[in-house]
Image (cartoon, rainbow over all chains, first blue to last red; front, side, top):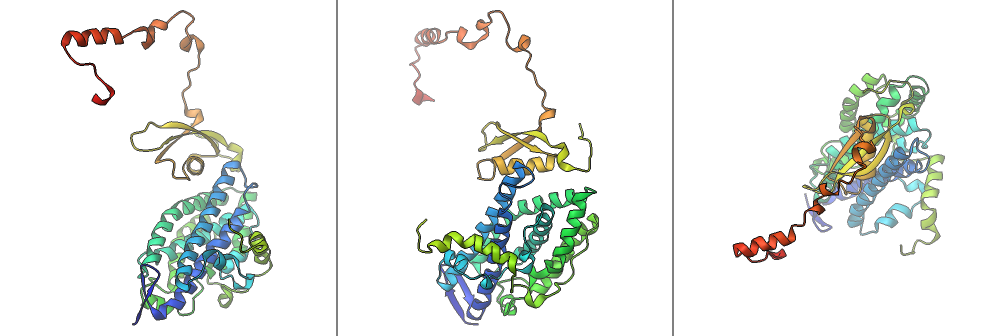
Length: 263
Length: 113
């Protein structure tokens, strides 16, 4: 395998470069879109304390997106802000689970649980990545995700265990999100090269099984269905629909006023 | 004390007091309070309010109802003159310098410490 020097510290099999950019793009867009959806709770969360918590979680996710885009910028010799914002909605590569609008609190918590648990499995598979800059970044992000998962788990249990409206809303959200939950693990073209080069520990299909096994006990305990395979895996990270088109317009509106502006 | 279980989590919000430590060896100081329905969420909210910027290495979270309060003025603000119980009642500086002179010890300066 020929090796390419990349960035300051990364040595990478040259045929793994293209799939690595796809992986970074997918992870960055997942965090970016989730961060923007959850930031919509700022000012209107159930109580003040939760308002601060959810806004802080949203900021964390956008910070993770920025870090992944920083790695991507090194690989493609670009700029993280431009890679993030100077795009049409069709160019976003987040998973379909994140195409659903923010909706109510139960939907936000249900999605956070499904996504954060999936992300945790994906991050674990990258902790020993042969691409050192990614392994080092993932080590930091995993420490921050500990709290994210505690928060989502705490709320999921409270909603699931509160008979009446809370439980009913959670069940409705679960039903709506479930067909798209597994899209976090949409296979990336060339991912076998990433596995072979040790960039990621296992193919997406295997990570999906690990995720299902990890959340099954909680789902059973709370009487919630275990997510099956994605109903439309071919469109796992494409064709995002009107909710995200609206969100993306909101997210980029200032940037588009003057992309050259210094902040 | 266990809060009564109800079907609506936020019908039993109550205040929790948060103490924080900035670095090892520092005292725990009162940071403020959060409203939460239980200890677990109180800890989450304490972390967000008093720890998310890396400003604390330890938090203590205490249900306000569990704090034992003393605020009786008869016990805390005695009506008679008790100023002699304050350390200011004992002027040590003069006595100390006389004792040092007698022992032949030099006056201590800040750099000796």
